[in-house]
Length: 258
Ligand code: MF3
Ligand code: CO
Ligand code: CO
Image (cartoon, rainbow, N blue to C red; front, side):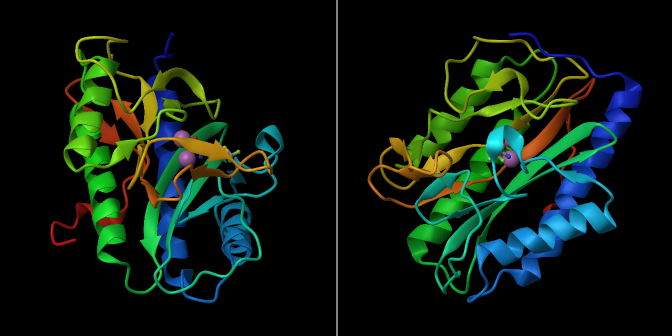
């Protein structure tokens, strides 16, 4: 249940890894077009991470995962494996990027729409993005993990969507997935107390229908049981003396007109 407290030197390395992961999401955006395959997106990200960033795509061979990024389309909740399927107008896709630079991990994901999304899809993405930021807004020394989970769950359920329970955020650093687990539901006033120097992700998965999920026979792809749409956003965070720092912040997120 522990969480490591990062040193000043380790925090600098986490900042760099986080910035690189965010940059991959910015780089890939113009490539997300009707007709592209998720395998082509994987290749572009892989080459950028290896050759431009001189970093390592953490998913590749992680517990046997075969590709360098995760691409989760429509009813896929998470861990979609890039393949030969072409994106089409109206699809929504989560791209999840984790890079290792100088021994430290940065992990972030966002949703993209291919062409004009349906009203439901665009509402689902907006609520999920806001749910992440409501969770982030709770991060400061003294907050307990249950406070974060409860805030996310309450917000999502107020919009009549559901929070996936089987997958969660995580501590992050030299390891991809460290303690503690960051649940996106919970009870206020319970769980680990945050301290400066902790690093973890928040990455709510939100379903338009029921919360239940199932694993595909490939052993990775997680889909909604009722085939409803699912969305996810993820950031890597540092707990600071007074609140938080988003280590994977993108330029679009500092623009108040977004
Ligand atoms: N990036 C995912 C996360 O946010 C984990 C992907 S594991 C993989 O924790 F093996 F599927 F890449
Ligand atoms: Co993660
Ligand atoms: Co991730």
